[in-house]
Amino acid sequence: MFIGGLVVIGILVVVVLIIVGIYNGLVGARNQVKNAWAQIDVQLKRRHDLIPNLIETVKGYMQHERGTLEAVTNARTTAIKAADGGVAAQARAEGELSQALGGLLAVAENYPDLKASQNFLALQEELTSTENKISFSRQFYNDSMLQFNNKTQMFPSNIIASMGGFKAGEFFEVTDTAEREATKVSFS
Amino acid sequence: MWEQIRDNQVRTVILVTALGFMLILPGSLLGQTVLGDWSVGLLLALLIWVVMTLVGYFQGDSILLSISKAHKIGPDDMPRIYNVVEEMKIACGMEKMPDIYIIDDPAMNAFATGRDKNRASLAVTSGLLQKLNRDELQGVVGHEMAHIKNRDVLLMAMCSILLGAIVMLAWCGSRILFFGGVTRRSSSGGGNGQLIILLPAVALMIFAPIMAQFIYLAISRKREYLADASSALYTRYPEGLASALEKVGASTEQLKSANNATAPMYILNPFRRKNQVAEDLTSTHPPVSERIRILRAMAGNTSLSGYEAAYKNLHQGGGSIIPGSALLAEGSSPHAQVEGQASPHVEGVDEVRTRARETHDALWKLSNYQMIACQCGVKLKIPPGYKGAFLQCPHCGTVHSVVPD
Image 1 (cartoon, rainbow over the protein chains, first blue to last red):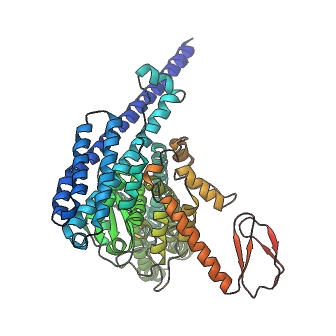
Image 2: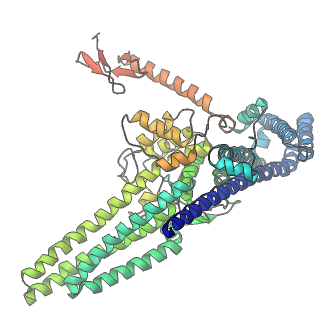
Image 3: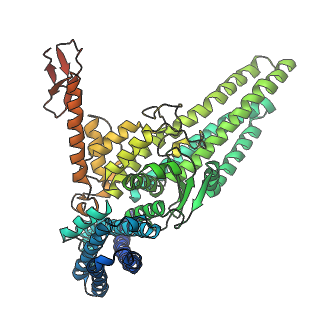
């Protein structure tokens, strides 16, 4: 009788421990997703901050490219506004900004003086790196989201997930293939 | 990922204990032969071990960095390497940026050290920065970041310092035995009893450092494969690391500030004979050509399981090189699905390689080599002087008949 009680208590303790472990795992995964999302934002913001510098630097060299420069400035303004307007709108605006930037850097190839400028080279390095950071943070976000989604959908953690209100989220997809192309041309 | 780290921690404990044994055993034997009391020797050796381990845990990284003559840089000193490290930090989801050190040396190499992911440092030579392009640098940095994330760095730092202690003890011990202990014993007429203890002591002095090195290397090799696989996972572009390894392996420059204790920490063994390429001479690392072949065989699948599959493909019936727990932790993640966005290069590279191969084949044909296309996709190149009538395909084993022309 006594031993039987002990066994029951022991089993209960183990079950509770497992549930706590699964729950904590879910919270950890969800926090990682949140953190990954914040990373993307940090990098996008960084790109917005870099652009005025870039325009300032290239303006003197590229008198005949008013249109290209304006396109970048406008795309930046739109992207900053879109930051409050939902993921899809933001992704689209940022995609357009990437494209405009790609165009600018492609045009810059025609200006040897500009390409020799230390200032421009430093900016180009920063931009290249920021583009990479954006895509790596996106990649990490997707990986984290995948892990989180797996946990919310796989047995047995899905039971705890549905009780604790953990819902599977969406991946950050690049819908516009043009963005990929633009990045490829200018930053390889 | 956590599973894999715990795996590594258990292994660290076993390894460090085994290494500690290599320190204690010769130590107590030395005490017995020289002082006539094994416990004094044992205590001394234990003391050395504890002190060394503490020093290794708290100061190992700074000691190693100063031995390697590395100096620290900030984001404004060398933006490119700083940016690449930050990119990889984001890709592997690490919270804290590791410190970056530069070793002024034309040789190409890199290593990571530190206690855990909150205190880690990464050192690269200036030669590496000069000769690698951005993608290749990313691959190398990804490899080092994987060492940090898997906590290999702690294992490496502690073990290389323990190894140093063993080598030191053996060195001192053998001097004492040969020049001090032996003469005193023979003059006092110790007899056979002394000799029985003396002989194994001498043997241990010789073998302990060697054994310790073997234990060390066995672990270090396997961690290299895992770090390669993780690098491919972070960059989604195994070709970057493959071509970096190719360049580093083909260079003949020697790293001046490396020594035996720090050798296994580098991305590629820094010790090679002058004017000789690194290919397959290494023992601290798996052969370079092998690592490159696996990375190139990964094709589109850049997950850890993709690396494992590539390895199995190249070694039919070979064991597994990625810990099973790591594969399990990765789950059934379809990396191909989310992969496209980060690796815009892949198609272009395949094209270039096909073209390069075609050019190669044309050149072979020009020098009268005969080509046989095997059904497994391998092209056998037969030199003009080949006399045999049959040839077995080294890849799939099919036997082809050779028609002399």
